[in-house]
Length: 85
Image 1 (spheres, rainbow, N blue to C red):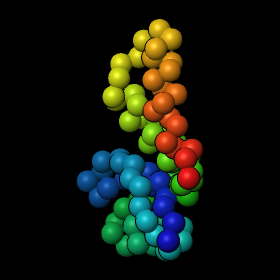
Image 2 (cartoon, helix red, strand yellow):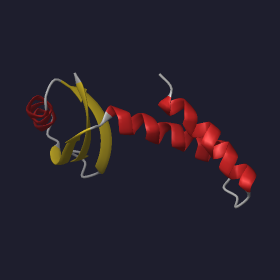
Image 3 (cartoon, one colour):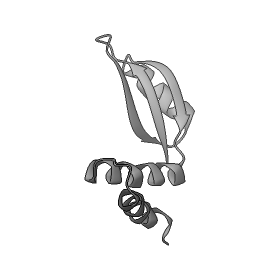
Image 4 (spheres, rainbow, N blue to C red):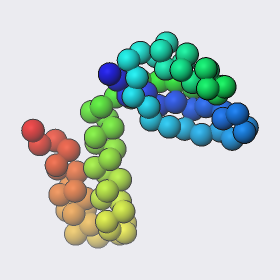
């Protein structure tokens, strides 16, 4: 199973972006079209980049940005867990 980022138009006309797990891009596209959704964009999500992005977004929410060296040190600490095995 892979994760895909899907930008689609709902039957109500609303445009949304969701992360969806599916066997393949073709299977996901068929499933969404069967639910009367219009697929605007569909791309496979890179799990490594996703993990790094999530770690960085947690750091951004945890502390406001500042231009001091202490904020640089704290941002380094926040991003470090994404690279641990």
